[in-house]
View 1 (cartoon, rainbow, N blue to C red):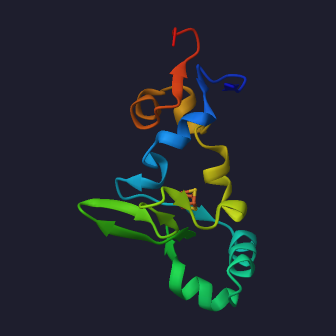
View 2 (view 1 turned 180 degrees about the vertical axis):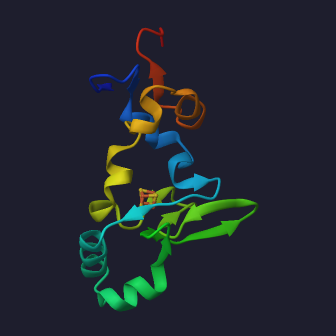
View 3 (view 1 turned 45 degrees about the vertical axis):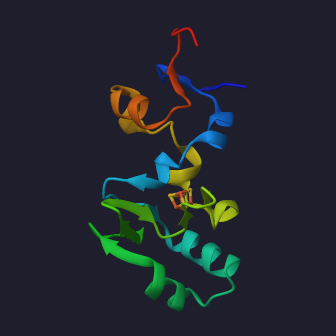
Length: 128
Ligand code: SF4
């Protein structure tokens, strides 16, 4: 099954995630933006008080909230990414940024980075 979005020059095959090392949850230092509502949902999912969750897993950046990242072997991993099992530990309540990947506005006009990062992304009329 492939997924397409109007206005995006590429398609995405979700099944590819099964063999991917989790490229979208690791790599260069970055931000995993969360809202106050996300924090409440994620804290509840982990049965934590929002203030404890925030202290342990959230940082302020550019006037917003981002999930923490940890550095390992020269790359940055989301604090909720389990690299051994290649899975997200808060998948059912992951933030919108993660749910909408790889159809991000930043990739709409220039998909070069996402074509490099995600093995499940191909330009629309490119033969598999
Ligand atoms: S919240 Fe989950 S899906 Fe999003 S970057 Fe972290 S590990 Fe990946």
